[in-house]
View 1 (cartoon, rainbow, N blue to C red):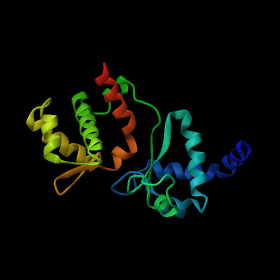
View 2: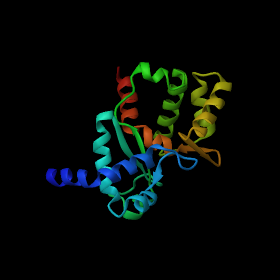
View 3: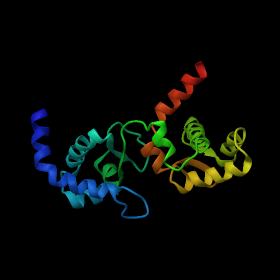
View 4: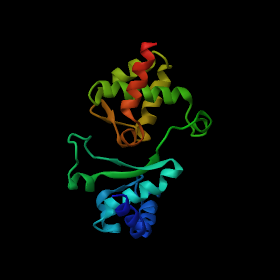
Length: 190
């Protein structure tokens, strides 16, 4: 297996560069690229090329992240689901506090997003906007709550449909939901 991956890395090196370009640069309104676009550019072995790219960018603490259109319901996604999925390059590890300050978000904005995501996850992926606003208004001023939720929607972390909030593409790509919930539960035990 290791020998096959080593040979694949050599054979796919040029294609891995092209995949990195596709994934790093914004082509449409959303960052990243769909699986079918990668297949067209990289050929039928596009999934193997993504594995090679993921191994190459590991040293930079980055990873190739896949976000399915529908949250994973099966253990192994179908070929069609993989082709419809969107692929991004995201951080592999965690951001330190110094770097976190430079991303343009205040700590209370990040905390509000964490609360909103955790609440929506606890409600099986959808929650009325008014409920999320009520929870956030316990710690934030009312005007900031509405502004933050609108920002979360604009940035792609949350989506809204018929008054219900749900986790959008960016939350599914960038937030480890299980780890977030584990941290919240661990904090509650202290």
